[in-house]
Image 1 (tube, rainbow, N blue to C red):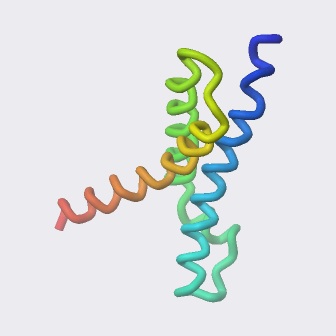
Image 2: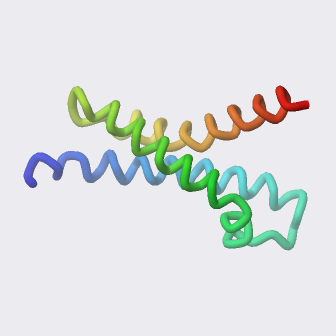
Image 3: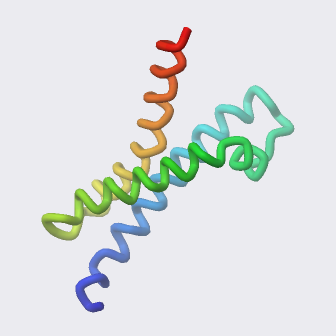
Amino acid sequence: MNSLIPHVAPFCMLLLGLATHVLKKFMEMRQQLEALTLIAYLKARPYKSVMATIGAMAGYLLLADASVPSLVSAFGVGYAADSMLEIVGAKARAAAK
């Protein structure tokens, strides 16, 4: 149990990075649809939210394999998890056309 204590702060930064990117995307959508709420935005993309969270956790496990990750790298993995999902989705939609 004591070996998990050093991972608390990086894991919180991972979640903060994920939340930051989700809020960024929400604010971009809110500029187009002013009546959109955060709850409605999250309900409209349940699979993307779950997949981004799973991706962030997997990324954290890869970082934590060698040692306790830095706070910056943990934040970056969380932020990039949702961002990469958007990129992959855009490429898939373009290939489907």
